[in-house]
Length: 234
Image (tube, rainbow, N blue to C red; front, side):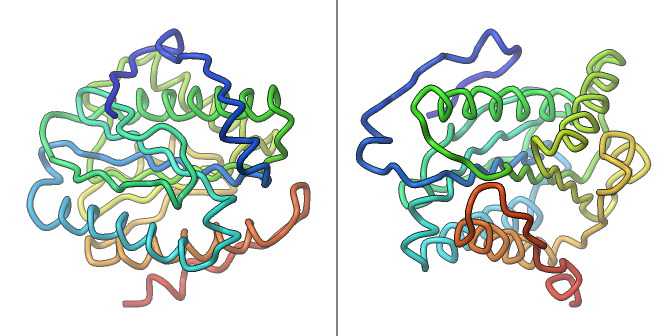
């Protein structure tokens, strides 16, 4: 189900107790923030779609991880759409993304943080433990459709959330992405990394293995994630 996401007020406060009664496992929330602007057309959007499908398949290989890991997807261009709200990976049906329009990176970041906060509140209301969330942002552009206020807010929110260990926010710039602009959004200890389009598969393999490692641990544990380098060596 796709919904427009323009402000925190668009969030619906739904605490579906039934899903947590059926599956009371701690949750590992992961949000994918994916650039679907026109410049992603062709091989890039195809590679991104294939990588998301592969991510789902690999995470589902382990039963416990499939029950604990949750995924949400924000697709952004000049509009920001929640194409998948949080569900467990075993219930996740990867969307087929279509490239069109401009780029609102800051708006997408703000939307992702709002969605994560709403999900964590749902966990708290229902007594569900959760791991530190992971956010993964992909872009090949720069924030051409963002206001100055949105850019400043997104940058400050990511840095504050990282400092408070409220999220681990990773960003990757594909091919011709403006890495200077992207760096301005990220915490200094977690700078964005450049990717070639062909490396999208590798970074989603890294994400799948990271989510699996987290899900096999216990909430509150300090866990070192796998190195990204071995997944980007080709």
